[in-house]
Image (tube, rainbow, N blue to C red; front, side, top):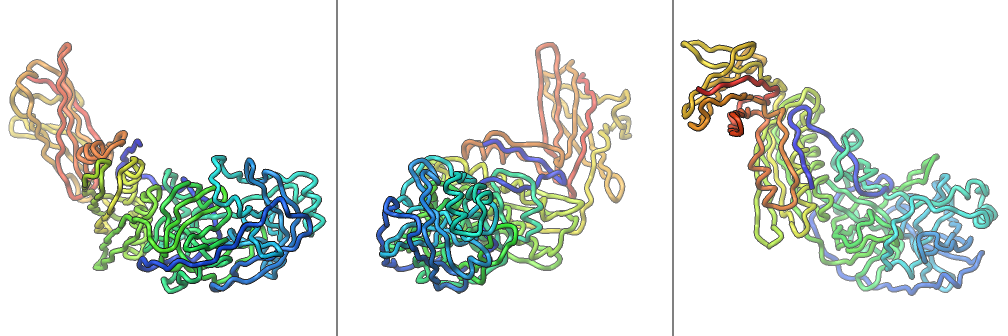
Length: 572
């Protein structure tokens, strides 16, 4: 993993990476709990025994936590409709809510039963052209299979099947021929505003299609509500910042839960937390599938598998979690916000969102300003040994100090989370925000000669003695005028007769980083980081094949420093 570090107001923003889509859901959780195993084990119905016109029934939730029944009939079976050797059962659903909103987001996983009560499978797909009562059902007999083929964004429908769909519904053959698509499963992000989620720049660690949603209540639902046809949710993080998708449980058998009928984010083996949920209502959408709005309850188990045919988990034991916290102080107000992250690939996005969410509660505005942030990352290396990384820095922004301050920390968390065998225990940060967005800029380099400071450049070069000290100062322009910062470097005795250059650069203009593929490399990168409010002086000398390279960091100052100056130097 390569990470680079850009400073100051030029600090980047974020948005997309891995994840799918699901309807707007209100997400919020409380402390971790566990649940007793449930016991309902309905056998699978062989898809090969289905025929067009067969009556079916099903269960789903439109409000609260109690499943409601629906009826329908089989339109046909689409061979290899989901993937190689994985058929899709086409069903027309008859239910008042479906008549209004079509097969909605959040209905994913709703169990569909044959007339004899056996389980055919889970609602997982809808027609691509728009709201419709036609559902693509993932066969339950295959919902524990882990196929390697990636899920198709859109499943084509042949002419014969399109005609069958048209006969059973008011959908035209042309509309049906547009194919089916997986019901969207966006990651809902609570604790962060829609403006924050939408107004970010690309980073590889942010969930695609993420939607900002309202917070919920830990008392919204309990583990006893995770039943066939009941709500269920899978989350990457919970607490101040919850990143989750809401769907439906297909089967619950002796504490083992299967649902969704399609992937959450197609991670394979995973460690997402499993949550109950309470539906508020199903929102209609005239141009696409409707979506379920729901509150999440506290975690009650672990989602251990995320595959083409759905997600699988168990009630009871909760997944290991990384504690991610930020304490923000501004204008006499202080707040600490905390989230629990359960999936390594989401640690960076949780880190960034936690900083944003807590700042927005304390600063309560998008505004220019400056900030000092100190952070610490703790964890376990691949050999089981504990490690700790820490740093402190200053940031400034002429537009949005909150949005600019969190990227460096999130980038480093992302790099560490990509190293196999490294486990993160905690990511904590402390921020102090100020309205002052002023910065310094390096304007010149000066050397003292004959009792006066002489500005170098334009024919004036720095003069040094071998074995002595090169005594300079950097002139910084700022809101109060010029500020001077001493810069002193020792010149090696071996440098006599050498020539070269000396440069002074503001920390806000420096790039640091590298390829982080181990904790040891991360420690070296952090050790080499230069604060945005410091200056780095670099001395480069050469004579024939002999070279001298030295650098020194000076500061910190009381503001972020931009700009750089370079002058010639000769050693006597």
